[in-house]
Image (cartoon, rainbow, N blue to C red):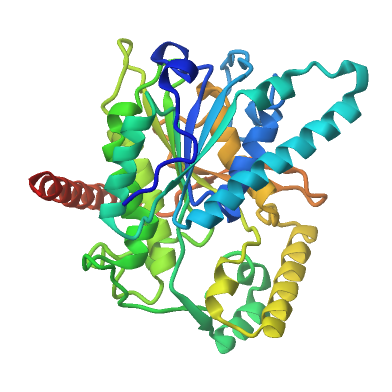
Length: 420
């Protein structure tokens, strides 16, 4: 059973359909750690400004000839942390408020007499709710969606971030070979992370596949009727991919990624395909034919999180050595010219916050088969770049075949649930 948010959302006081543009309601899955937490942290500090830097068009991805509208300051935000672990979700909520209060205090001290008071106004209007969501089972996803439907009047953004893989070790021979022959790729798209194959959930579906992709697909379909927004500011669904998402790991025959020895990479490439296919397939339009729901594929670049290390089960000392070596290699890659090594979760979050906040005319169009990625300069300044969805031309038909499989399975699960 899904546990309800710690603070029941007051529909009459906080949000109506008329003020949805000035009161975003944003769901972030996997928000208690890693990139999900980084997106939440970066978002709330950005919105302390009347004109957030992350909302400004980025020259490398913005279409030319467009005149973006001015950003409307946000005075209210409802942030829904969708997490599997109740305690970690509560800890994340507490930490977000603590970090925000520290940020506002520093901002007031830095600005002095020029401080405009907006940050404290935003802080008063910020609601952070926690709702339990286990993406490994369809039952939990449907229960989560039932709760959302009865707790909020609409949703403006969904960040599909949660995920993981059945990591179980390091292939040291492959690691040595890759570091010697292609050192930068070794710390960008490593081939040496061992994973278990054949893992399924309690329903018999691919476990990694359900956690990373299909659970998120159910979520977007179940909440579809809540996702309508204005044409000037369409609802945005963000599919979080990875630098490791490559077509060689994808097989339409093994579409639930059960038999592959690279289920993480395979399902992350499915995020690329499904995210863009959903964008192209959207039939939600306003009177002028503009989409009212947009799907964007994003990735955080290369960031340090403890997902891989935690699942290795290595002794503490060994884990610390691996962490130090990993971070050293990440910084070395950045200092030698790699734009993709964001390293910190707040730097890695910029592709997400920019896609949430930027004017829609400043983002790629539906026809652009790209994903927006977090990048940094050598000195660590974060920015957003555009990377092609590798192999889209060759895999486009497979993407829509995959989408049909997803939809058919979703419909069957929904009908079965309604009959129970």
